[in-house]
Length: 84
Image (cartoon, rainbow, N blue to C red; front, side, top):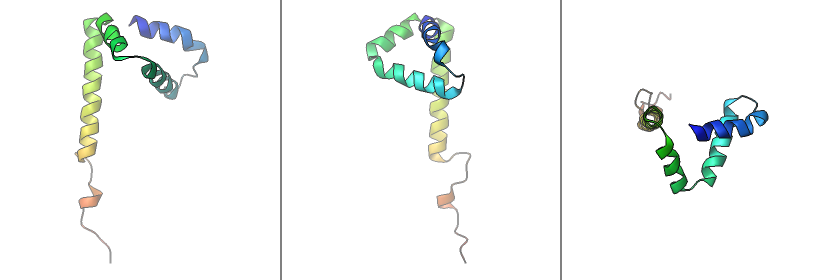
């Protein structure tokens, strides 16, 4: 995506290379973009980028929903108490 390439080029000398940099930069940029801006970025995506973005969103939302519902995890609050 051209926008990401330009964003990276602008900030690359200020990045330390850890994941936190990407998170901070992403959140900062998203705070400044309007819905219309976001839709314009999406329109510029090719099919593979669009599928990747939606796929990642779906994956993260499903993982969050499963965690919220306790699927695949022990639900400590519903386990029998073992207090003597």
